Image 1 (cartoon, helix red, strand yellow):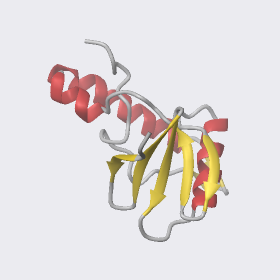
Image 2: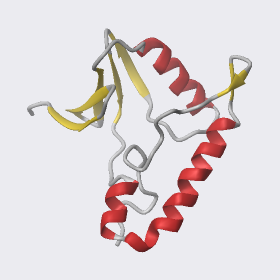
Image 3: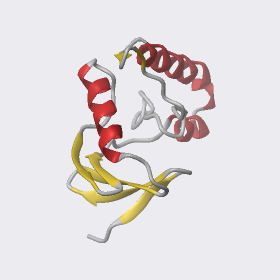
Length: 123
């Protein structure tokens, strides 16, 4: 199976590796080991983040989260705007409650293009 890019942003791109795994390849620098540690810390506190399978030089191998993003779901079901907005606000609130290095976790890029729709796959 050829590796294909399934998403891309300013800082990284996501490639489908098959078998429920993706490669998050950092475009400019980044610190994959630190990122993996933060993700696993958030996951250990019950936050819904993909599992980290491997840390590579300039990349992470992560669990594939299948389904539509909130943004894609809104394109098909615009009446779900309030529901998605509440979900996204709730995710931010939960994340900011997780202690980390004497402070709280803060995600600077959590938005509808990076979050799976809680209704993905349903009409």
